[in-house]
Image (cartoon, rainbow, N blue to C red):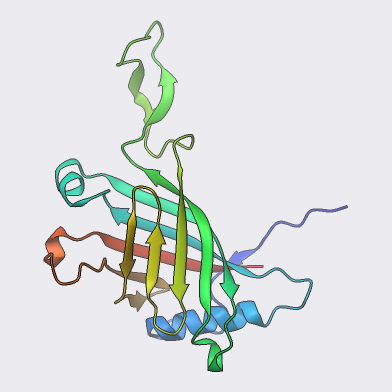
Length: 186
């Protein structure tokens, strides 16, 4: 039995350098996934970053959140893929969760050397459920420490980005800002 590594690439069907809307980008990705042969497992790789874990902490501490994982296409009976959803559970990391090597002889709270300390501890990840509606571009996020949605995403150079929804209660400067990178895996 041979193992084949997944190949990651830009979303097929889009012309490089051509400006597209968020919906056009997501439709191209959904069509490519849906056109897979029966034994071909096509999916999307998501990389997501945002500023912080909440209004108070992100403004004060500068915490960054990062998530990555794979999304599959949930097919709905609708015309031209617009009712379809990209869904998956991805790993969510925080920049204030640090990891590294202990300083020689150190076994107190300062045991991790600043030189050998790194953000996004892989042992302190959380599971984030992600749903992206192809027709509207709405993103829904659900984890123990993060619940929310993004309704108005912009698309530029294969990146999707926008502010979290707040129901008009918070000014933009106090909302989380998200950047999403979606690529094709086959």
